[in-house]
Length: 470
Image (cartoon, one colour):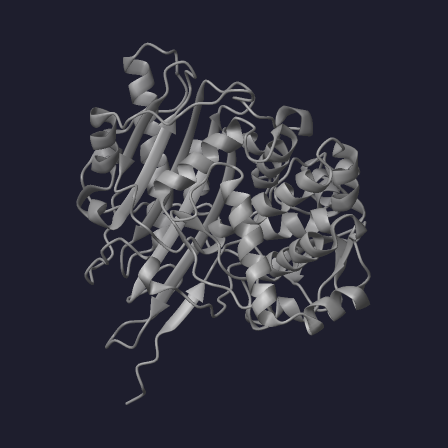
């Protein structure tokens, strides 16, 4: 019999972010290809109504405010827990309805459970990078833009190994493939690949550039030889300390708690070999604090918060939570990460999002519905760990149920929310599942990663069959 070697897989998923008219501002080339696809001039996926906001329409909705998340509303919290039915013990959820900014309503369920954030941790890398830029150029937004737009980043050994596709535009045709050593693009594009396509290779390259920026300061960007020499000659202990210090500063400087939120390492084996890291963890409650601070312009500053929010705006294929049909007309700002592990078991076949030893799926989202009008506006953080069930499908179903619950609450309160339907079957207390995924899992490719099992604070569901609630 084969040795019981667990298989651990990371599946960030393929989506794409940033408003499609943003290429002249950012230099993110694929945006032009996607924009032309919407006009039917090149082949490409058509956007749902919620994915068509322009650059000036994607903005912070609570800029200048400084709120504290209110205490959980008991009725709302129970309604949210009921959406998960008998699987609720395997979920941790936080929801903040800010449709009426003067009267926010908060619900949570096991929101202090600590888990490995997977690719959701990439938002913390973006936070740290934008903090460094602000520290170097506190009163010079144009200088920050120049660093992002004009710095040429060339993929090197830090990208090894990652098989996740990223989009390329050659001026005539859109294509998708994994990053290769030698691929060159500006730093803004690598941020886009990290947060939209959720490429681990791009994430590690952004972290490489982040450490160079921290070390060289205003002398950055440096040429490839100088960068290579820095990582070759600096002791690994010092590189590790620099990584930890930069990531902690990104949290602490923005009022976040490193004991509840941390991205401790690179996303690839090549990155981890060059710069040793530490464990990663998060809680839904602390990620909710990050989302609220972003919407208020308090992640670094207003410009940085706006740019990170634009980088999270989905303008291509929607997956997992964001693939809910109920959100088709919504602007969704989204990051997701999946960590699952399989081990040998009779008659069990390991499939995406259906691990039998671990099956974590994490989602963070800002939802504005309908896009441009924002009659409803809410923030949501979800993590789940239900074995042998399609977690992507379950999150999509929960996205539908939560949207319809909020519509129902708003109608009951006379707030004028009229779009969408509340179906009684969406509220019943059964394990989550639903047919009709919009592109879930397309483009996902497995890559081995290390997981800090001690960071997982939720119970693991016992083996169970796949239940479908239509």
